[in-house]
Image (cartoon, rainbow, N blue to C red; front, side, top):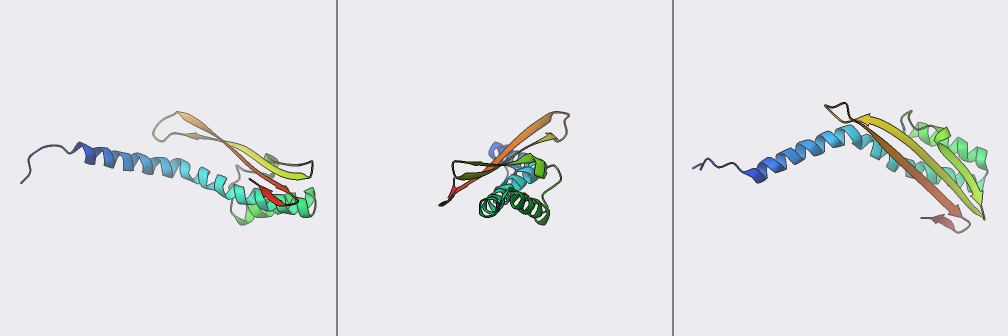
Length: 123
């Protein structure tokens, strides 16, 4: 038989699931793209070290296209550097996204870097 009491823990859990779902739906794709960009930067860095910067840029462009990375990340967001035998590919981009149901904008900043020397990748 029901006692008529409200189960606050269940309400909090349901609200947490709803908020988490809305957050994941709104912002999750951007974080997924950032995870994919880590591998893109590593592959471009490997090609940059083994061949040259122009081949590394071609590899970067191909990876962006093959992985269906959205148009808000472009080749110009990535820089190639070589210093003291270390080859680096650094990608930096920003995305402005509004919170759901509000006019409040959130600017998300992403940085991905791959560094490789003659012994392999440096994390």
